[in-house]
Length: 440
Image (cartoon, rainbow, N blue to C red; front, side, top):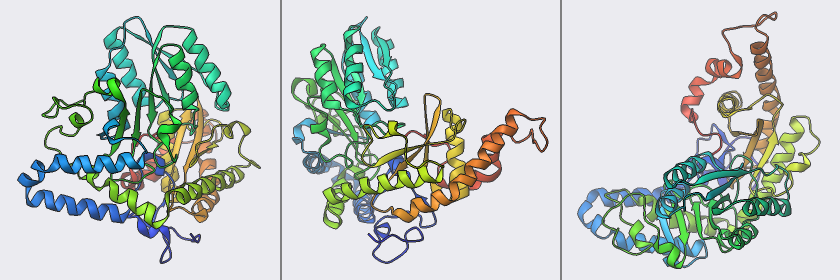
């Protein structure tokens, strides 16, 4: 994988395997993934077949879905009878929370690294059941042992019926010791729902890493690069038979996982084309080699960007429990301090540097979250490192202008990063996904 000086340049470069815009450096794989051309072609062929003969297509769809599910289960190293296909990890979370009974006056335990949409789903389920939600604080630099101890203490402090925990956190790119957390939760009498949105593809065996979790959900459109709309929900035995899809349809009388296969007349070509993406990466790169490459590149990217922002190395607190293919780089104080500001800064960086990145915020601190996948190379991060300091300096200057509007040269009509983003970034923001969730 020879580094290029321009994105996607050079015959045979891995970038050519993806249908990404070559004018942009795509450094935010963790949010929305990217689909190889081979999988897109497979999906389009399936759509053509579906539209040419809807009647035979939908009558034969259950058999095709079962075949795709078997292939995906093999990739995730789990029996196909334990795996249901869902649209994404959030859909899996909603299916679990909508199916199980939370005893009233008990608690659902979260960490303060939980994904925002999952928090909302948990809060709604708890209100409906008359349960409470409690959040345990885990310092950014907590070790695996410290994480387990803090969660264990929180479990012991109250009647917790369900622990909902990330496998790899979204905003903070932490890899949690999930198997250990499952053990302490079960010892306390609580079930465990693992949000493994970033697990597949980044981890060789995300389900083994999750130990004896009662429920696990994961995305396949992120690191495994399947067509979007493909996720997995894994549960075993009697617990699995408690679970029903969010949409009741003709599959309802079937057992798990078949009852998830039929939820109305839907385009399920993403599920059916998922094996093409998994097979392509295995054949072209090898999954073990791909993971090693992504981790190596993420390490180098973090060092490059930290140095560009005046640090000799990334803070020690970011070394503990780092996700294999995502890294954080702290932003200067005052930038991306809340989600609205993170969104605005993300759009501005994209407009000014030609790099699509993720800006995240956690406990009032802003971070650049870097992703590394097969189509990236060192030149991508070097380009961002060259452009970013000046961009952030402008943002800080705008912020200071907003704080002191009467200072010489101040422009009250340009309120901080948000106004500058509006002035300089709207055209590119429309093309690159304005208003996206900075913590996806």
